[in-house]
Length: 67
Image 1 (cartoon, helix red, strand yellow):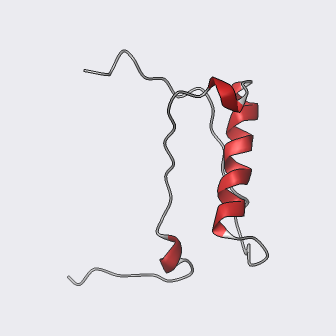
Image 2 (tube, rainbow, N blue to C red; image 1 turned 60 degrees about the vertical axis):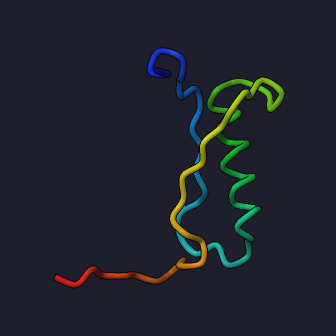
């Protein structure tokens, strides 16, 4: 079990709104460096990372489930 071996130490996110001038990779990098700053660490200190996102190929679209 990993419940006592994992910790969230920093969080970052991209700017909300229209980011048409930024690539998906650019936005990920922005969020990652914000998380480093939030945690007060350097990239070399990371052992593992998790990234959550909605599917970038669906950006700007909405899918509704049929009822």
